[in-house]
Image 1 (cartoon, rainbow, N blue to C red):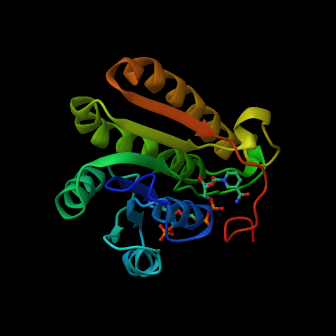
Image 2 (image 1 turned 90 degrees about the vertical axis):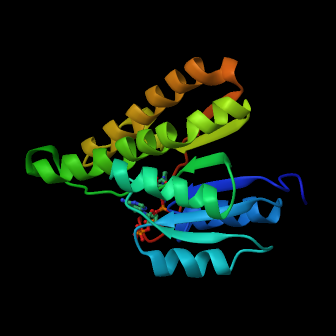
Amino acid sequence: MSELAGQVALVTGGSRGIGQAIAHELAEAGARVAVVARNGERAASAAAELPGVGHGGFSCDVADPEAVSETVSRVESELGPVSILVNNAGITRDNILLRLKDEDWEQVLDVNLRGAFNLIRAVTRGMMKRRDGVIVNVSSVVGLMGNAGQVNYAAAKAGLLGLTKSVARELSSRGVRCNAVAPGYIATDMTS
Ligand code: NAP
């Protein structure tokens, strides 16, 4: 029950769907959870609904490196050093290849892939100093298999796997683990 007591977990996209369930499990295990999403009110109410105390909601667009850096500083001053990072925030902008717009490509890559990079870069200096950190990136079965109508999303999710493996190779000797999960279909706002 209190396996993660004293630890701070930052969950991007923790206000809804899969991220909200992840935040709940981490809170149940005793962690203080920073729920990060663009909609700050929703993030705050999701944080308030978590079991236990010491959680917080934070408004941040993970695609914006400066906002991410400021948010990680706020989380660390309000909740404590982040020892668990879950890069779960994600979006889709689906269309067949020939109809995909430049902004559909850019937004999906910016949120799903660059967002994870932004967060990892912002939290790992502290994790390496403390020789203690766990990073979990939420990829997708689509990143492994590909999917018609989702070339942008599949590319971002496959990129996330390369990012994960490289971060693991770079930081495992410094006490920081980095893994990915690749879920299949789960009914959420994203899939509705
Ligand atoms: P969801 O219900 O649409 O929730 C997405 C979450 O991400 C929300 O909290 C949203 O909050 C946040 N978010 C979106 N863009 C953001 C940004 N730029 N900055 C910060 N937060 C942002 O999605 P979900 O289905 O739970 O998916 C969660 C993750 O699982 C995603 O990475 C998705 O690709 C992956 N996944 C989902 C499925 C599935 O079948 N559902 C399958 C495999 C993988 P705001 O809108 O307030 O920002």
